[in-house]
Length: 201
Image (cartoon, rainbow, N blue to C red; front, side, top):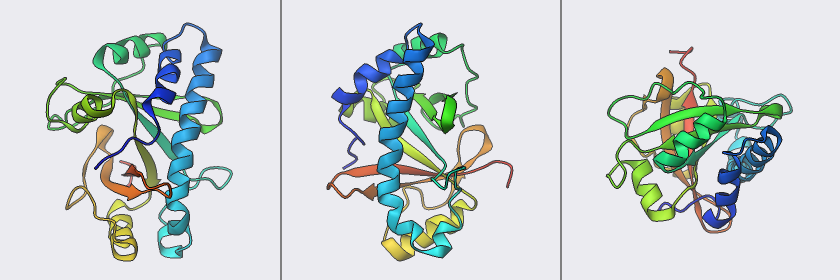
C-alpha cells in the first residue's frame, strides 16, 4: 500500500502557507516541507550510498547531500491559488498519457518543490488516487540520477526494489523517470522517483 511520506495533518498548514502573500512565510513553509521530505529520502538512501556503484549514479548537492525535489500533491483549486501566489511559474510539459499538471518552485539553499495536481479529480490517475486516499501532502520525493536505467537495475538487484514501470518512461519536460515504492525504517513506505535530466538523452 502506498502510504504518505508524512502525516497530512502536519503538512496541510504548510501547504496553506505556500499560498500566502508573505514571501518570507512562503519560503519558511517550503523549507519545512522540503526538509521533511528530503530527510525521508536520505534515510532510505543511506544503504544505497554504501554501494559505490549506486552512489556514483546519485547526483550530489553542493554539500554532499542528495539532489532532491519534494513532490507535493494538491487539489486543483489549491494548485491554482498556489501558482498565482508564487508568480505563476511555467507549467511543466507533462506527457498527455499522464494524469498530472505540475510546476516547480525553487527557494534559497537548494529548496525545490514540485507542485502536482490531477487533470481528472476522482479519476484513476496516480495523483487523483493519492488525493482521494490521503488528501493534500507529500506524494513523492524525486532523486536525481545520472542514469535511471542503471540505477533502477542496481536497486532491484541489490535491494529487491521493484520499479513501478517495467521500463523507464518519459516524465515532465523530457526527463527520463521511474518510480520505486521503498520501505522506510519506521515501517511506512515512500515513493521515490528516479529522475534523469533530459540533457543526457
